[in-house]
Length: 489
RNA sequence: CGGGGUGUGGCGCAGUCCGGUUAGCGCACCUGCUUUGGGAGCAGGGGGUCGGAGGUUCGAAUCCUCUCACCCCGACCA
Image (cartoon, rainbow, N blue to C red; front, side):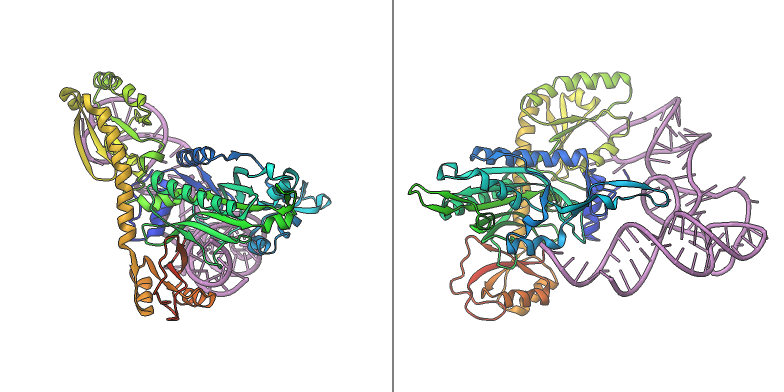
């Protein structure tokens, strides 16, 4: 691993890719736009995944798995849906290769499929084709199924974690007997997303509704959590859709209610993806690399032993054996770095990888009956008495978790502006950047005009919006909504 | 799809204009010794045929033609 990363101030985009690759989170795959998630990055994703998996299971959801391949015809059943995804689908047209004298290996034209198959960009269609079979009565509802899967969207421009051709996510697909219930489910999930982001990833988010033009293709309403990254751009970090009866209609999914009357089923779908990893990186990272919130850090504590010779090495080992078991007992994820190499090198490397706490243990500490503790969010080191190490470590981890959230929230809040004129709006967007909270007249024309002018889009209509008395920042008309504008990833 | 650029050990690059010993440097890697509290030092070592094909030439990383791949900007998408 070569030294350092490009400073954020010099080039934020390069900083980001430097961190991803140098912290060994991910690497580029051989096919353009694909990503290999390396063990350290995958461990991070798994912790995020497990945290959310636990939350939805507590709320009565179950996991299942649906196929990667979807009949091409399915996508066309919901008009808006096909419109939204048609341009980025990978299509399987043949099933065989054969060897060729000149070109080595070629597609066997004989193997052309009668009905081509698409690789899922999202699974609404397959899932609803199955729900048709599974739902007859109100007694079959609600159906609360989630799947952890990969999906493929053939993007033109990709970035590690933030937008890749193939990515990992969870997609929840629920079916309900009433519109009210579907809406409640949509909002419940939105709240779980908010909690995941804020309490686990320490990433503050605005929650709310997407505008008509930004909503999911096929949804009645799309709710989202929206976060601010270190360069003050917005990242859509999760979406929860109320699909109304759109997919029930498309796939003819009906049920008999308690009055023996046949009705269309109400649906929701919702997803978060490996994009969240990118969000964590850009919310907390600094010029030394990654900074991970303790709750999702693969290693919460890294231990760097320091010694000169075999004798020192053994005494450090013995000393650590008096400390580590009690930390592990507390459920703290610890890694000891006994590799050859200088301590200084290891300090930098684990800082790059964002480990929240580092313990340094050498002869001096043994002599003083202490351990040196360094936290990643501040450049502070202090010696802690051996007896109080468990207590100190767990309270520091809590403190780091809280501090990262507070720091990110302060950053976001101090970069969220209210403006009184469109000139001021344009000025902020083009110079210092950030979020702008303002009135919007609710028309697509205004939204598009602002986008063409400034590249900023409506990120979210906050759930707690206060549009009363506001004027549209662009048209000057009575505001229909209070919204947040920003340039987005 | 339009504009620009780059292909030389694992990574980053020099050499290309103006053809000429054995293709070089930094990092990484391997071995040994000394080191180890903020990216250790020394010594030795392994690895490339210069994206690919064709051509010019006594001689090509270098010149010419074709071709492939990738990157950046834009368009598209979020």
